[in-house]
View 1 (cartoon, rainbow, N blue to C red):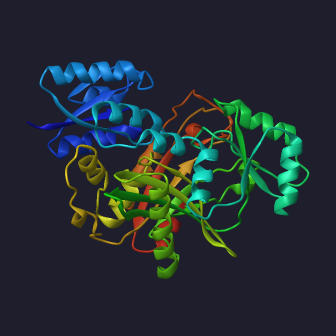
View 2 (tube, helix red, strand yellow; view 1 turned 180 degrees about the vertical axis):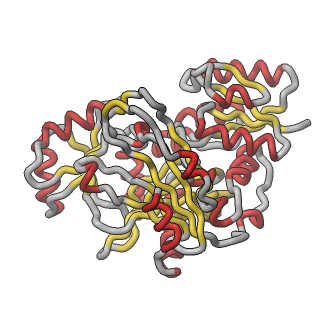
View 3 (cartoon, rainbow, N blue to C red; view 1 turned 90 degrees about the vertical axis):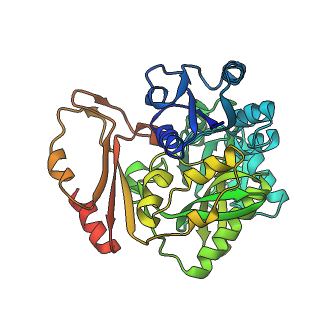
Length: 398
């Protein structure tokens, strides 16, 4: 019987996984609380269930199994829900994050404590509840700049920098506004290049096909918020540093108990201490990283490897060997707030042969919000070329 994969979520982030699943000859199953989500329409079997309603999702899976559907695993892209994946995988004895991994990977303070226990280098951190706590930690660390964020959110929600004379209570209130559990973490700000990684783990052994330089061109524009505005592949760092970071993220994945699956790492290169783990997610990235950037740059689709592992099939790691080495960049649209009167120039842009993707999430007459997290960005484009200089010229033109 054909194996079937349950994909949690049917938004744009998960559509690529559902399509890849079908292309591989597997049956796709999707649940999403939004009955109009595109994933529900393209999956072989689907139901409008919010995936946070774990028991309802389990009941739906049991129903499909009773009808002869060979459901064999669960996965997602983009959604930071390892604790939900772990509950479903544990119930059906599928491959997935353990309950412990689900907890570590969805709570930044517990995650960082786990890294410390396993000797994984991280920026200094601490949980804070008051202005006094922030001041105390800054004095102990001997720094002026720190990062404050909720322990339980992703996508830059509630994240901001605190500088020397900033209003600390205002920063605390901002982080709490986005927090579900009202727990706030303070981290040392490290000034250095940042790297995005995605590591495939199988039986405790990792390989890292996703590796990109992160771009923060608009730091002063978004300040005090911290907003990445795109990335570059391949990375410009040295081969030695590349290998060290690969070893670091694979060790971090094992520290979180990710033996089979995927680990998405955020790394900063400290000029004194070397590479440090900012945080790690037990999932595939959303957006363009595994869907567009790596396939366009390296000619591989490692989402298919993640699917194979999730349904219990031995993956073919030869498929992760790069087939090419093109320069690829993505950039996000961050328009100012206000009324969007019109969008012009799209047809002209689409005629650029190096432009491989141009997606807008807004339309004329929309009211554009103040952008304080990545879920409010207005769109994205992806450019491919033979070198960074030619790709940068197209980025500047667009």
